Image (cartoon, rainbow, N blue to C red; front, side, top):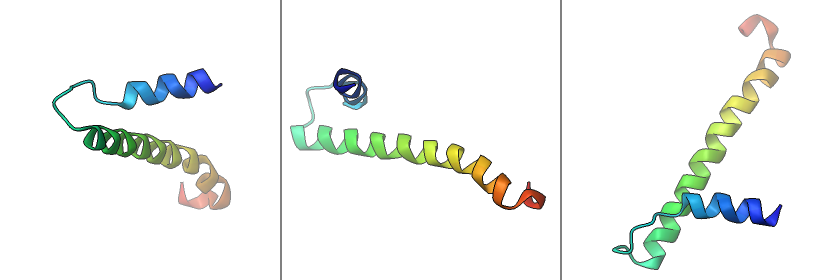
Length: 56
């Protein structure tokens, strides 16, 4: 599992060497948060449909 997390994080890191390390880390964190946010939106849709069926 650790290697899969490392693979995911390495894919989210920008590959250009022109940015400083801090900027690359910041881009990586923003990409990870965006990916998690999209997953939460998709994940909450079925829960919302169960909680309030007439809304869907």
